[in-house]
Image (cartoon, rainbow, N blue to C red; front, side, top):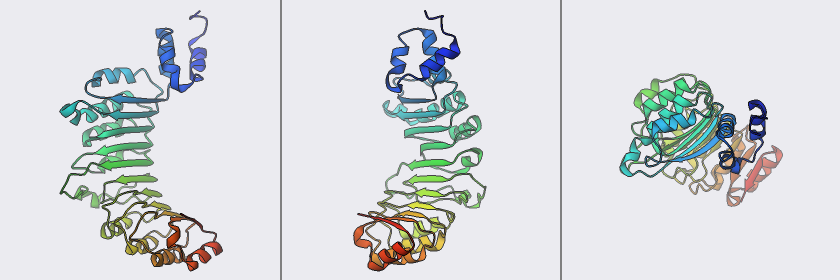
Length: 300
């Protein structure tokens, strides 16, 4: 019975199986079914630790998924051995997944060298979600020619201030990033193609740092600072002065931003189409102007 269907037809059948239970069921049929099922998979989720996975075995496992384009890895366990484990995992991924388009690797931080390998061996990568370790730099981004969305978390060190490699100030290479999500990072470089910046819940971000950052992102059309409790009216004024193309802005849960600043922003942000803000911060003038200019104000 196993030999009746050719590989191509069986692969098509396996692709139509429900995602949640197909792997476990297929593995019980035969090695051929399991091999063909893996060869047709484009997305997998893994939970790894030094106790249950060694990099060579991971490379061998991933090589069974030649079409893999979406990979989500959660790293945990292993005590002190976990410190270099994410780097080893990233190197295994880079060497085994040439068609990868989206990668999430958390929560362990990765370092510079594995990122260089990733940029060289995974040229089609468009989305990357990682944690960076110190000292960190964005220089490796220049080699990820297809990357459009980057999500970066920096593990804070108590009593220290995060700073990007100073040499990055002179690093003026054209990048294709369209969306940047930063968590725990308060210094940036110039991203001239960037259209969306998400700084949600960076509660230590203050006006001086934010205003300096905006100078590097003057082509933004969408800006999210929801929950950035250190920002005040000065930051909101800087938004419409530095980012003239803003269309969507989220300033919810920013207690330092008041009614007057919101009103000034609505009147002067000429491309604004959608604003997320508390109801208590919308003045009659803001409401009237928004109505005339067809600006959507989502207030709660």
